[in-house]
Structures are given as C-alpha cells and as structure tokens.
Image (cartoon, rainbow, N blue to C red):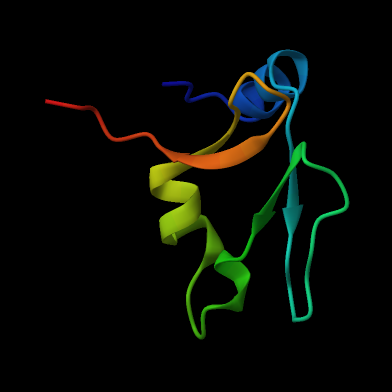
Length: 76
C-alpha cells in the first residue's frame, strides 16, 4: 500500500493502461474499453473517497485491452 501524497496516482499513471472516468451526474458513460466509470459521487451524502468503488475496487486491464473494476480484497 502506498501512503504518500500522490504516490499512488503517479504509479497508476505510469503502470496502468486504464483510465478512470468520474461520473458526477447522470447520464454518464465511457468512450473506450480502456475506461472504468467511477460512480461513487452519485451516492447521496457520501464522501466519494470513502465509498465502495474507491475503497474496495481497482480499475484493471484484463489483458485483452478491456478495463474493468476488480475486487482488491485478499482471497483466503
């Protein structure tokens, strides 16, 4: 886990071929298979930085150029 200011963002930009598209109000959509739609901001009265997508998921490339949200919980 990275804990420095923008360390994770810099790492993500260098290493991930995916792009996160924030959705602030519908309608929302993506224009490329390399994009993941971030919808946490649509939840009423929730801080988007504490919502489910940002806490438990990551936008990752599945290897075929398609980016999708994947769980980051450790498997037992």
